[in-house]
Image 1 (cartoon, protein in one colour):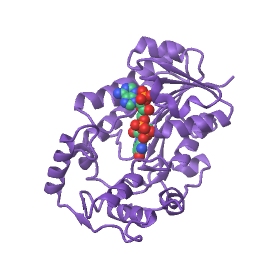
Image 2: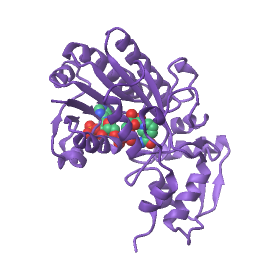
Image 3: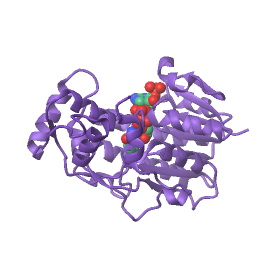
Image 4: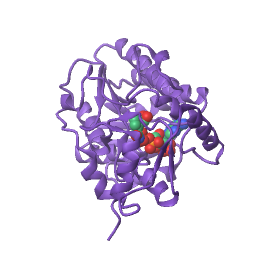
Length: 313
Ligand SMILES: NC(=O)c1ccc[n+]([C@@H]2O[C@H](COP(=O)([O-])OP(=O)(O)OC[C@H]3O[C@@H](n4cnc5c(N)ncnc54)[C@H](OP(=O)(O)O)[C@@H]3O)[C@@H](O)[C@H]2O)c1
């Protein structure tokens, strides 16, 4: 029987990964911090949810027992340096050791486009530096275990019906008269959540290039952030598709805006670290494998986003 542990299986990407894995005949265990967070996958057959602390290495090794593979989708977007290191570096390190202890030989780790495992310190944000370090510790763990199969997936920003990206831009423009926008010229290559989920499932099926392999997951089209904001309004029919005026902010004012947003309660819409990530474009390097290496043709954003942003008739 094919058994896989999916860390972060309750999240935006994770729920789609679980759906596809179920269809592909996998039996899945999904750890969660809180049972209630697992609602997106509770209805799926062959999915078992367990409430546990994945940062407890012994518990992690115990949870891995009896599984042939593991997928790691756990990440945070905001936090302190210590929080990024705990989730993006320490957890993968524990996971590498726990795989060895439990005899799990296959790992798919979802990193992020812009992570640089060759020179982690060159990345402009804590998020990207820690993502790069996470890749380094897993690569070291895999190298120390002959026959271990490691796939590192690096998606650009991910869109889909339940995204917090195009949906958010559209929602903000329904409320506010103008869009003050930091990082307006940063380029992205958005990838569909279904293509990311398919890449995870395909990575588990074997027969790929030698391990460890790094694969960039990008859509077919490149957009600036400003273009994505405008497109979201157009597709959502804000002001008859004209959207709101977008006011690109200079870097210093962007940092002030991000600082103010960090002070608001809950998860910030944008943090100074998010802004730092946007100092580099989020597009395929062209130096690494892409979705095509997994036999997946990336889907274009506009037609799909229209399907979920367009006003309900
Ligand atoms: N979304 C994007 O646009 C995007 C772009 C590039 C890369 N990625 C990468 O893709 C992966 C999946 O992203 P996503 O958007 O699906 O993330 P998500 O919706 O935020 O889900 C992350 C999951 O991780 C778990 N989690 C969060 N913080 C945790 C912590 N401190 N300790 C333990 N578990 C924690 C949560 O599970 P519970 O609440 O059930 O415990 C949650 O379901 C991540 O590696 C992310 O960096 C995403």
